[in-house]
Length: 426
Image (tube, rainbow, N blue to C red; front, top):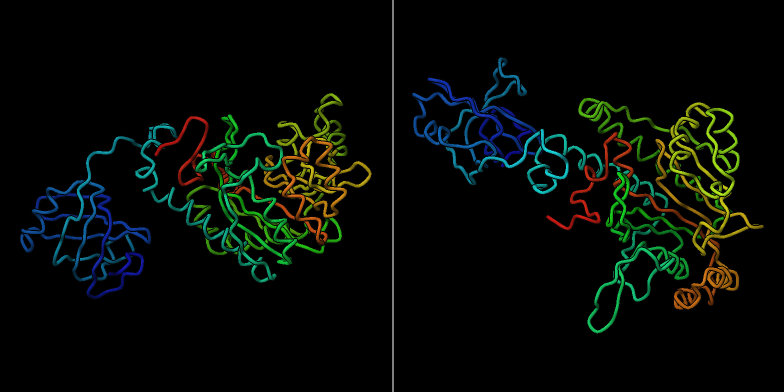
């Protein structure tokens, strides 16, 4: 079988969807589509009455198998090639679609398998696949190991909140919020540099464009860091590498379909302390919040960071540092009350939280006790009792990254099947 995008003059066999069918008095012109492209099939009714009869009863979006001769024709807009069919078989007939271009995203999600059939939607996932593979390539070149961690866990991870409880035979189990504990176990195992691309689960009753109850996380952890600056530098290099490779492969197509220019960011990424950001937002844009809210970025402050990064640094990315520890996980290292971690803001939305981790047993035990989690994470703390190298890491939401890069309205567009508080189907 020949992929439509690879057709050359000569004998061919293709399979695909009937995208368009013009049934004229003496001729039929049919557009057949597969993931690689489109081609015109031309039928002269007087010469092929049996084939003309098949197409006269065919419906749009039915699937078809065709053998025939591919011939050059300068008048054909689809690549200057048409197929003169010799045999035609309708392999599956399609009913009229229950959704259309005017349907809302939630209506389209009810019939996601049809919604995904468009060139635009398929491009989202071709692009996403290429971008993630490029970042994976960067890590493999830098001696990272890909691991796969369990998604059933015996205790509620991290804070214990926002977890899904499930029945695990005669016990309780939970769906993992992140692979964080297992990433650090890999550091204790001497793996030194690891990553994982896998689902995570958050029991958040949130209906924003950037939240989902199940999402794909790109997690990275590595040993022998000197500070969280090493973590930020590696992430910046990985993202720049991924965007450069993806721009080369898909830049023109993304511009054509989504009207978006893929910008390859310069290194290093600019960084600012949280407190300095609020000072600049006030000075530049008149944005103020009470002191009590300055322990984290508000949604509006996060959004204004896009403008700030461009105005101050001529850059799309901004690394935010020096958070107080009360808003962050207990396993992040602290130095004189300052978190040794960061958030990465891109286009006004946080895409990463990263940090140097606390690797010293007594310190991490103390941090867990302060947050009332010592009992919950008792098994996790065992990882630190037998030698643990200094380490750090970060996680990127794949769906959120894709949404921002392509300028799409929500994660509902960038997840193959979206999961939110009100959606479990299809």
